[in-house]
Image (cartoon, rainbow, N blue to C red; front, side, top):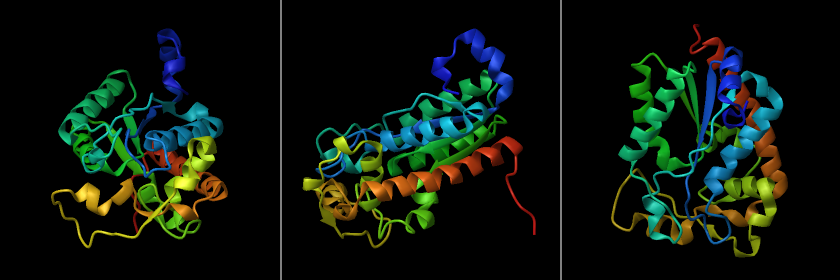
Length: 241
C-alpha cells in the first residue's frame, strides 16, 4: 500500500490492515562511469514495487528518502552528501511520525552503505519509544544469496550493475564498465580514502554484470524481504533452541 496514493480519510480507514511500514532509503552518488547517480535509490524502489505486487495489502510503503551519507564518494561529481548525524535526526522524526499515525513497526530498506551508521543511531532512539525497527541492508544482509548468482560484489560492481540492468538497462552504459580490485585490509579512515579505495567511483568487477543476474537477484531477495515483513508483523524477533 503506497502511502502517498491514499487520501487522509482512506489512510485512516485502511490503517487496521497493517502496522508495518517500509521506508526505502538510498543516495545520490557516483557509481563508476557506467551507472546512474540514482543507483542506490533504484534498487530499493524496485524491491518495493515487487513487494507491492506480492504482498501489497500487508504493508505500507512510504516514499523513498533519496539522499544519504556519501562522504567517501563526495569527491566525484554529482554526489550529494548528508552527514550521518543530520540523516539520523531526519529519519528519527519520519519514523516517529509514522508511529504517531499508528504505524509502530518500521523497516528501513537501505540501498547505500554510507547510511548504516545513521540508521543504527535512529533505530536505537526509536526503540526506546516502543517502536519496533529493523534495518535491511539488502546487498549486505543477503550477501550469501547474492553470491549464488554473481562471482563478486562491490560498489557499482557486478551485483549492483546487474541490479540496475534489470531495473532499466537503458540507464546503464556497459561500454564504460570497469574493474577495481582494491579492498581495504581493515576499517580505516584516511585522507582521500574515496579516491584511493573507490578509484573511478567503483569497486569489484562491473564488466561481469548481466541483466539476467539482476533478475535472479531481485526474485531471490524479494522473498527474503517478505520473510522479514512477516516476522515483523508476527513479532517473531528471536528463536529458542
